[in-house]
Length: 423
Image (tube, rainbow, N blue to C red; front, side, top):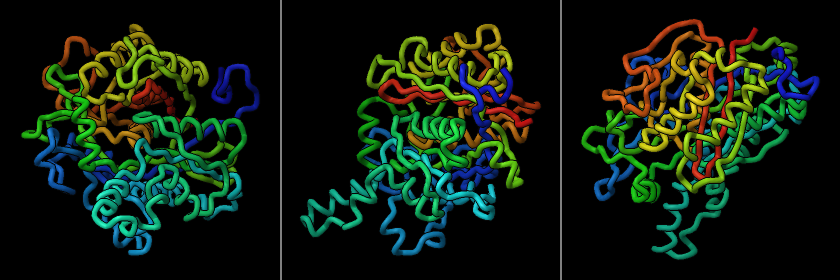
């Protein structure tokens, strides 16, 4: 199958390319700043600063830093936008500006937005609930609902830029951003849209959210050493570390991008989505569901497993998840799994939940462009069950052709994307 044969049995499918990237993250508020910090092995995780976490079991997170929201949004806009929506809008602005699509004669009715969130406006919810308990109904802002609901990131992006095409929110926990990008890929490949802003946004570093994940025993409690707490594939890992931010891609059909003379950053060649139907939080044994998702993406793209150079893994630093992810890679790639380069972005920025797949997809495209792969930080004592090449020693360089991004979310949701160099 050639590059244009995206779906088995389907003809005349559009090729889908990337023309813009945008990121807000704990390690940088642009794709280049984030990527440079990842290559250097820096950590964006520290003791929580946005509230007093002293009474919580987990007191660390990857919080966004150095972001001048006041210069970007007016006081009126800030009141009408939950923090997760602010992140989404700022990341989308970066991607749209880089793409140059608004300077073209693109049809706004064929430009859509799929930007999801795993939790949505939880900051608004907690603040409003506290105000309601102390002041009653008068303590509830008229913007409470519009700030709370998780579809408003996409809605606000569309309003800001006049994108009148398909626009709705997908929520699949930690796979949200990856699903949004994959479904946007389908919209374009099937010819329904010319361009899509796609990805995820999250701002859930809050007392209630941290308490909930901590009490599930899903989060690391290595509070004394925040920067080493997220340690995917390490024998001593004890759970994930929360992060916040947003990551989006501007996707276009190849014909649309070439017609307007856009710079093409890479190609999104395949997408697979499945469900474990196994457990509300645990990954299916052996990563069975994500195995199927990867196989779908590979078949759809016409890419063979041996052509994949690098996997930007889910890599959350949970004991069971990392083990089954290793088994998934061995199943899909067989002997080639020993040759794969694999690393976890979460080792340095934490787990951004619904935004994780969006931010990590930006990292995938940057890796293809730069021919560089960032390391997995804090992998000091590899777990014998996680015995693949997770790049613990530092960044690497080579000409990459194909990169795979996989995500798994609570509820058994799996999504896999395949990016490749455009030619």
